Image (cartoon, rainbow, N blue to C red; front, side):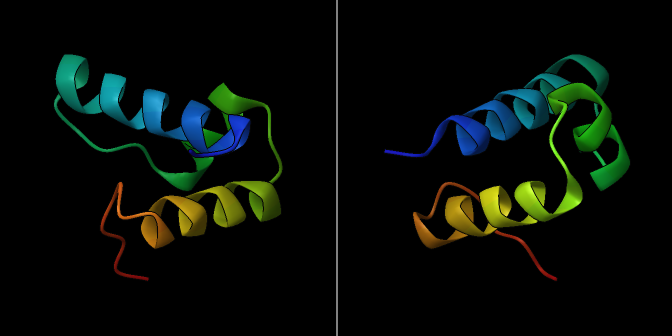
Length: 57
Protein backbone atom coordinates (compact mmCIF):
# COMPACT_ATOMS: atom_id res chain seq x y z
CA UNK A 1 0.00 0.00 0.00
CA UNK A 2 1.52 3.34 -1.06
CA UNK A 3 2.17 6.13 1.44
CA UNK A 4 -0.02 9.24 1.52
CA UNK A 5 2.41 11.18 -0.67
CA UNK A 6 2.64 8.40 -3.25
CA UNK A 7 -1.16 8.00 -3.38
CA UNK A 8 -1.62 11.76 -3.81
CA UNK A 9 0.92 11.85 -6.64
CA UNK A 10 -0.79 8.92 -8.35
CA UNK A 11 -4.16 10.66 -8.05
CA UNK A 12 -2.77 13.91 -9.52
CA UNK A 13 -1.07 12.07 -12.41
CA UNK A 14 -4.20 10.07 -13.20
CA UNK A 15 -6.37 13.21 -13.18
CA UNK A 16 -3.97 15.05 -15.51
CA UNK A 17 -3.80 12.09 -17.86
CA UNK A 18 -7.53 11.36 -18.03
CA UNK A 19 -8.96 14.88 -17.92
CA UNK A 20 -6.23 16.93 -19.60
CA UNK A 21 -4.54 14.39 -21.87
CA UNK A 22 -0.97 14.83 -20.61
CA UNK A 23 1.22 13.54 -17.80
CA UNK A 24 2.12 15.94 -14.99
CA UNK A 25 5.59 17.43 -14.77
CA UNK A 26 7.57 17.58 -11.53
CA UNK A 27 6.67 21.28 -11.26
CA UNK A 28 2.96 20.55 -11.54
CA UNK A 29 3.26 17.75 -8.98
CA UNK A 30 5.09 20.10 -6.62
CA UNK A 31 2.44 22.79 -6.96
CA UNK A 32 -0.60 20.54 -6.70
CA UNK A 33 0.68 18.22 -3.99
CA UNK A 34 2.33 20.82 -1.77
CA UNK A 35 5.30 18.47 -1.32
CA UNK A 36 8.99 19.24 -1.86
CA UNK A 37 10.84 17.83 -4.87
CA UNK A 38 12.71 15.38 -2.61
CA UNK A 39 9.43 13.98 -1.25
CA UNK A 40 7.95 13.84 -4.75
CA UNK A 41 10.94 11.90 -6.08
CA UNK A 42 10.73 9.51 -3.12
CA UNK A 43 6.99 9.06 -3.70
CA UNK A 44 7.51 8.40 -7.40
CA UNK A 45 10.25 5.89 -6.62
CA UNK A 46 7.90 4.17 -4.19
CA UNK A 47 5.26 3.92 -6.95
CA UNK A 48 7.88 2.44 -9.29
CA UNK A 49 9.04 -0.05 -6.65
CA UNK A 50 5.45 -1.17 -6.04
CA UNK A 51 4.85 -1.35 -9.82
CA UNK A 52 2.09 1.26 -9.95
CA UNK A 53 3.95 3.28 -12.61
CA UNK A 54 6.85 3.01 -15.03
CA UNK A 55 9.29 5.92 -14.76
CA UNK A 56 12.27 6.35 -17.08
CA UNK A 57 14.56 8.68 -15.14
